[in-house]
Length: 166
Image 1 (cartoon, rainbow, N blue to C red):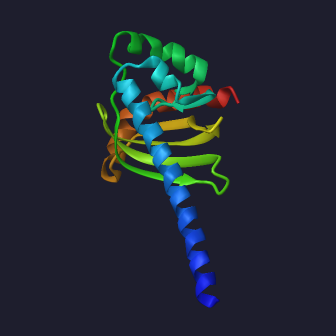
Image 2 (tube, helix red, strand yellow; image 1 turned 90 degrees about the vertical axis):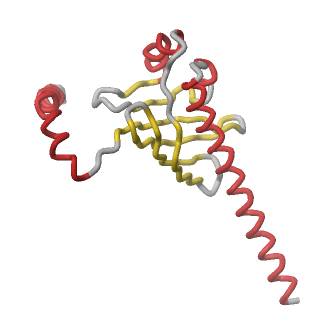
């Protein structure tokens, strides 16, 4: 009897882990195909992987793109046949217990060299969609002081504007 209980327990745990891996694999495929759609300038393929209220946070401090604005900004790049080319070289994916939300972080090989992407996906009608994406340029710690000097004047000016508008 004890062996049967243990066997059932391990089967349930195995099924749960396999379901979790399956969801992670689906998410991995969504993210890879999303990046590939940009590289191939496939506008519909790219934005079809995002929720209608999706958000894209770019590398510039003022790039907080709501879906419609991001579409308008991106359209000319896609129309020219050259958007951007990001390839994940490392990715971590986490899924909530209900398998309705997931979050991730990834290191990317890009034209800007190594960048980090992170974001949130949610399941809509059984499909994983990107709801929120943040792109940042990875800066080695030993180069941060130099970078701060490069951007200091623009950042100071922007900070004054932002604080004035609070």
